[in-house]
Length: 184
Image 1 (cartoon, one colour):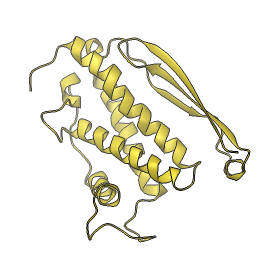
Image 2: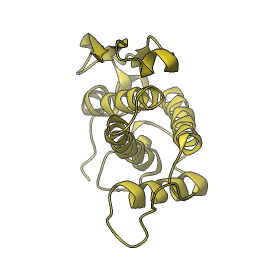
Image 3: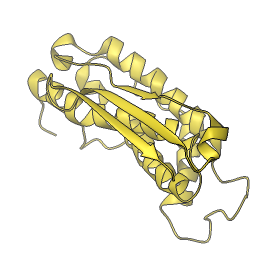
Image 4: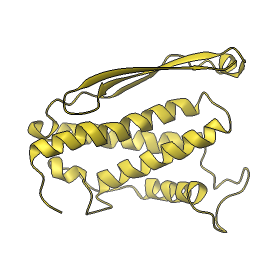
């Protein structure tokens, strides 16, 4: 792969890395508030963003951008996370004989979702602390805030929830998006 300049890396960070991290955080928060079939859609999105970030941190796809381009970074993965993501891939993306059914223990549940997200957040903090300043020019930490996690209210037909994002979508371009979900 062609060596990128710090300006190119900063742009990639703001446009693509930011998006992956923001969507992972958003999906994780949504999964505690919703029921099927929206849960399934959100779980699939969560799974894709988790796998993409794992690959970024571990240089799983050498032709793609990875964390080591931004500074000295430990590309060591986690066998446990790899095993969980392998299960996720079978559950979400592959129609084969090994896809889990119903409530089989091989299906990923909240504990696995949290375990992946916690590993990614640790890797993110490590990555940001070791990233060259010039390669993260204009970086603003993405924020995803779920205003309510009241499960009883979420189950009612008159439930309303606001979710807001803040952060860049491109080099040093701050945004704020507010999504309001109403069930009536």
